Length: 370
Image (cartoon, rainbow, N blue to C red; front, side):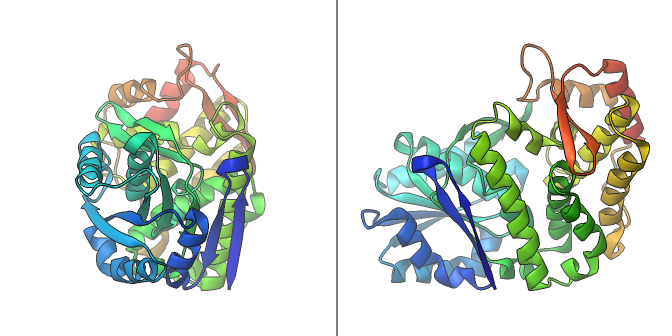
């Protein structure tokens, strides 16, 4: 079973290949995407992922005529830093990569974001290919060309728009994913349901048993639908000047929670789950969404948290509301002193508002922290 999604961006267009066993086709797909001039590839990964899949990927790439060199970075959001990027760039400089060469990102969202940022910076931009190995990266961060590293004052504040030449997704990689990481990706999938597709929201709500059993057909269906939605949004608004902002649903508060906990306590998807709940509270208090829809979104997040004996998201009741509000003010979406919020009007539709009274925002954050 396989699927393909095309991201139509003129000369920056590319295909997303979604197939069981796609890792075996990495060399063939990469060669078709990069052409014959590319000789050498810098594979950026981390030790865990490379231990599982590095040898197979390198073998496939070499069979396609590429020379490969591998750089292993740290794991987790704290590794998505300027220091890590500098080390990867030094690796490429020391090994004399040329402008016609390329980067391959093998790993989750942290690896993909950093590798894309390195590719955007090296010699003012070289090609790169995404091979995402976590659900969150497969449905979200590997698609759309947003690359970045974090700063202690906020997440993804230093980055560039740099589209990959191909995205290669093999759902079989999810078999080695810890259940917590799988669940973190599902929060992002739930996000797509809230902002765009009520049927996807219902599918995720009703089929959690099959998802956690790693049903290949269902996973490909979910991954492909999320990629289709993101491709449609990115095609309409590549650089986040309008429509693309809706993809940040749940991320304003989510990023703030990650920042105030020093990127140690929460997985990105977990933070987005909390952020979606808070956005629903804000929308309900502001009269933007009916209570039944607001509660459906909040309970959807809770159901994911309770699944597989976890029961709940990591605690946030010990966090300082002032610090969370301050972190929100550093959000990269702030424009002319106003913070636009992506708020649901119902399941399947959101709007962008920058006129919500601070009292409502503060009350909702306080309620969330409790």
